[in-house]
Structures are given as C-alpha cells and as structure tokens.
Length: 364
Figure 1: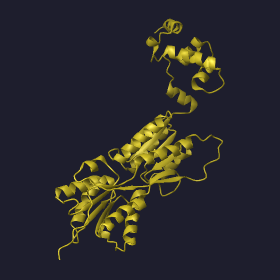
Figure 2 (figure 1 turned 180 degrees about the horizontal axis):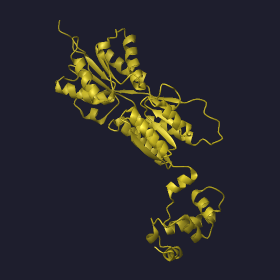
Figure 3 (figure 1 turned 45 degrees about the horizontal axis):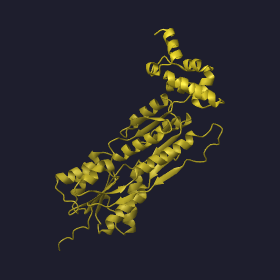
Figure 4 (figure 1 turned 90 degrees about the vertical axis):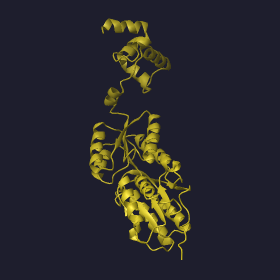
C-alpha cells in the first residue's frame, strides 16, 4: 500500500476503511492531530501534562483513523507485559474452574490478561511452566504449588514478580498465600458424622506433602481425639489427587473386617472414584454408608441422594488472591518492602444434603 493512500486517509479520515489496519501508527495520529508524537502518546495514555483540548483532538484523530495501540510493542518499551501467570493442578475440579474464572474476570477489569497453566500436580511440568512464564515476562503469578520447585518460585520473586499461592503453600512461608481453613473444615465434617453416632469413619485425604493433605488429616484426628475415639490407622488413606486414589481407597475401606459406617472423602478428585465404587458394589447411601465430601460440585447436587459437602468458597479465595496481587503490583519502586508474607484463610461451611444419616444399629 502506498504512502499516498495513507496520507489520503489521514486527510479524509475514513475510519471504516482504516479500522484495524496495522499501518496506522502513532505518528499518523500525531500528524492528523497536529501535535508531536510524544504529545500524542501522553494524550492517549493519560501520562504527563497535556491540555484537555489537545487530548480531545488526539482522541478524535485516533478514533477517525481506527488507531489501535500495539500493546506488545508498548509493553516491551515500558517493560510491562500486562500478563499474569495462573498455575493450577487441573481444570476439571469445580474449585479450580471457579478460581480461574473469578481471577480472570477480576484481572481483566484492571487490563491484565492471564496465562493459564495446568500442572497436573507434576513437579516437572510446574518447573517447565515457571520457566516459560518468566520468559514471557509475566508481571505477577498466582499458583496452586505442587510443594516443590521452591527455588524456582524464589527466582520468579527475585525477578520482581509478585507471587501469591492459593489452596496450598510451600513449607517455607515466603510468599503471600490464600488458603482454606482446612484443619477446621475437616474437624467440622468429622464432628458432624460423630454427632450422628458414627465411630468407624473412613477418611480419604491428599498427600502429606501438600498443605491441604496435612491440615485436613490433622482436623480429622483432632475431632476423633476430642470425642474420645481411638484413632485406627486402617481407616486413613492418603494418596494423589486423582480418581484412582478414590477407587483404590474405597475398595480397601469396604473390605475391612470391622466395617465403616461413614466415609469422609477429603480429597476432592478422589470423590468421583469413591462414588463409582459405591455404585458398582451397590452400597446404599446413606442407609448402609454415610458419605461426606470436600469441595462442592454440581455433580454432587444432581446425584440421588445428593451429596453433603464441606464447601471451601473458591470465589472468595480468588478474590483475596487478586487483592493481594494487585496490592503488590501497585507498590512503587521506592516503597519500603513488605514486613512479612501475608496468609489469609477462607472458612469452610457444611452443606447438609441427603447422603448422611445415623448408622444402623447392629442386630444383637
């Protein structure tokens, strides 16, 4: 396309023809508005001293030409990418779906975009994504960490990128974190079953090396201890956050010589495997076995009977995480450093549905 044709557009200003054209540059807007390129830049970004009349003239010229700022080029020049990394374990868990949606919507309102990374709880995959996110010059990171790769996370932070961990945190308390009140939530769920009369409560939970796995197990043990119920290690099954964990653990619990009367699945991904096994073995819920799960899901509501849960309010977790990240992003270069990482806890709540009932009395 010739220079003459561009000049013709600038004189006549046919926005319909020029709109979205990559050849329209800031220099073209400046020429049409009769100002310098630097003045046009200040007028469009709102940075620097420019009269209101000049701002209006430049904005009219930009609209007439259909000028679209090159965000990538501007980011390179300003050392700003407007990109935020979001790393989660999976996206089929409704908790992570909600987290991703709320975080994306909140950040979009501040003109940030997210790069979503699915780690599958793999240490190697997480490391690869952290390297990739650094190469894309992210400005912030929100992550559900595997619990490993601490040095890589530190590298991200050392590069000036604020880090907020959610759901879990590293054993080293070095980053802002938004967690669930997992100890209290697991204790509350276990207490609910104990009040119904259950004493043999199977417990399926995540790995010991994750925050939620450790704390939910601690809550289960706490509730049993306070009720004076002796802890039976055979009732506890820990494993990866997967359907397979639920299948294997549930089968093992159903084969115990002294049967369980309730099952508390505090590993959300394992819940699908638990319910599959109970259906295959035609275990009646709650007549033969009471079932309580952790983290709500539409699938739990649609079942018959619907499944009682300890809900973890993922929307609130996402909101707090963005609040912490935005606070860090808005810090000026000369501001004093934060005194210490912040940890926020979002409480859980018991949602009672139809899957729990008092145990059937054994026949004498």
